[in-house]
Amino acid sequence: MAYYYVDSANSAHWVANTAYSLGTRVIAKASNTSAARRKLVYECTTAGTSHATTEPTWPTVGNTVNDNGTIWTARAPTSWANAHGSLIMMVSYANLADGDIVLIDDGHSENIGATNGLSNFDPEGTFTSPNYFICVDKNNGDALSSGASITFPTTMSMGTNYAFCSIFINVKLVVAGSYLAIANKSALLQLIGIGSNLTLLQLAASGSYLRGSDDNIENGVVQIYNGNIQLDFANNYIQPAAAFEWKKGALIAPNGVTSLINGNKGYIGPSVLLSEIDLTAIGANTLFSTSSSRQLWLTLNRCKLPSNLANIYNSFGGYGDIGVIKIHHSSYDRGTYGFIEDSYQGRVSDETTIVRTGGASDGTTPFSFKMASSANCGVALSLKAPIINAWNSLTSEIAVTVHGIIDSATNLQDDEVWMEVEYPASATSGLGEVISSRKLAIVESVSDLASSTETWADGSMTNPNKFKMTATFIPAQAGPIAVRVCIGRASQTIYICPKAEVVAT
Image (tube, rainbow, N blue to C red; front, side, top):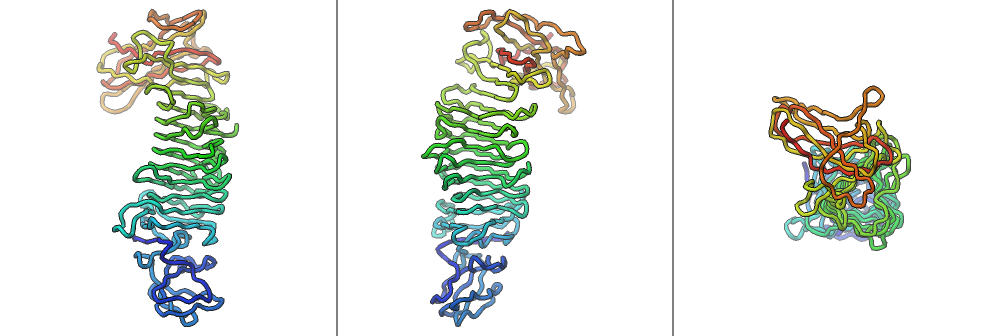
């Protein structure tokens, strides 16, 4: 592991026919094709005027070159005195080793394309030995700081030649060209903020975006922790190829945003997690958009949403039981129980009007699961509710019961609505078992679900029809059990109390 130093105030590109004083540092011109020379800094050890037209053939570390009488001595950028003026010049084309650390002064401001003319930024690092790029204050003992920024003013690819793992701490990346693409092969880019209210990613040009570079599913994993994303134009967006994770921060969008996440990269669509994010800047627009050929994998957890949000997403692709939108504890006006889970098969959400007396509650407000299947739902493609967790302390036979209600004079049958219960099946290991109340009509006899005598606040139901599902089994160990209710009937709405009864038989 080696330490390197970057400070735009320390060394600029070599310029022809220029008087240089003793101690001045320069770096190679942007047109220099030697990666080994681009990463070094050259100190003027004999003052003079550089050649009128020709850049020197730069030497290796410790050696000198005569430039029209000016003498340059090659230095490694391993101290602030020899800090490199350009991160991309120092890092491009595998100039770092796995685990190397780059300290960037908080006054550093680099416009990559304008000053260097390079189209690729190729850091190194692996998942076990990443490269760190850390913003520090060189005038305060290299204390952690903020303010350093790296601007990509042209289309730029990061990690084009190989996998990489790079972690930027308190450094802002600015996309001011068409896009910044993340890798052609497996790559992980982390942007981490230590402090408060730091902007870690800024999309600064009209139409600019952060994207995965191609359609390979394994590409372009971006993780942003404790920092903001700023969109300067409404048509800026994020387009991940494989996965995008953003935890704790805020969306800054002074001109609004048409759609924050564009899911049109990757073969089946990206996996997106947004957690503890203030998303109110989206306003009456769309959070996640995609074409009908991509699936959505979006989870929102404890995010602040605008009250006038028009769409969480625009469509589902319809390629079977893949793709789901999970929004938990994220509504602008809901309690801690509030959630929505959308899929091609329908929607499951919280309900506080049609509730079971003595059923599930947050301690103040009773609630239930509202399950509304779509026209796409069926026996082979069922709508699944979130798991209902319960604790069992017995190892003798128990019965697990879940109650529900439907507004219908016609009873539901056990091939249309069923529950699955997962429980410990081994006394010596973690091996589990699943028991299901489901019947397959094509090979089994089906029957109506058992009626329930529970009391419900049923709102304005015309035909309140109460039912229950029960599974009886012998758990091998005390511990948690998991219950999931499923609908295999299209265009059906039911209400489930997410408080399972567990009793000895």
